[in-house]
Length: 68
Image: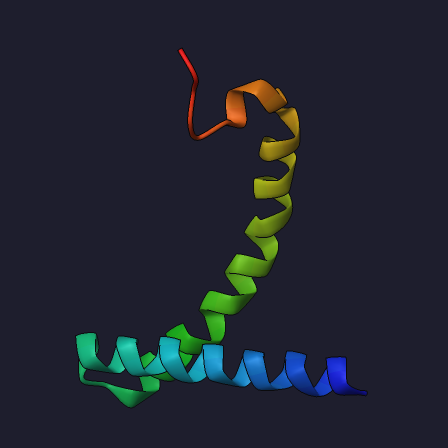
């Protein structure tokens, strides 16, 4: 139950932050709410592509620090 509550609260905060940023940029609450609701949906759809691309990379190429 805690995981569900945490997920819902994170989603709510995500939409609020995205909507607020969109409102600051547009000055229009209707557009801001549309962006705020659309953005998490797009992220959810893009996430599997992100995971797929990371899985295709060889582990040695993922190192942020190379020892020479």
